[in-house]
Length: 146
Image (tube, rainbow, N blue to C red; front, side):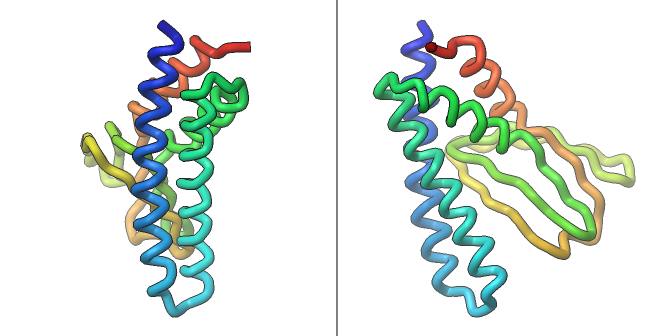
C-alpha cells in the first residue's frame, strides 16, 4: 500500500514539477528587474527539486520520501501581509484561508501549480493552509520507508 501511495504522490510531484519549472523559467526570462527575476528563479528551483524528489519517490529511494515530506510541508502555509506574500503548490491545491477582516475562503484546483513570493506583499492580511499538501505530508510520514 505504501508503494502505491508513494507512486501516486511521485507522479503528482513530477507532473507539477515539470509544469511549474517550464512556466516559471519562461516568466523569469521576461523579467526586467533583478529581484523579481531572482525570486522567479528560486521558484523554478523549487519546482525542479520537487520533480527530482518525485523521481526518487517512485524509484523507492529513501531520499525521495524525506525530500518529498519537506517539500510537501513547504506547500502548507499561505501567507499575505503588507511585507511578504508566500504561497506554493504543485500539481493540485485544496486550501482554506482567513482574511483579517473576518472573511474566509476555500478553493481547490486539480491540476494546478502556483508560486507566489513577493516582497512588499499585499494590502490585506491573509493566512491560509493547503490541506492537500498537509494530507500528503502526513501520508508520506506514515508510510515512510527506512
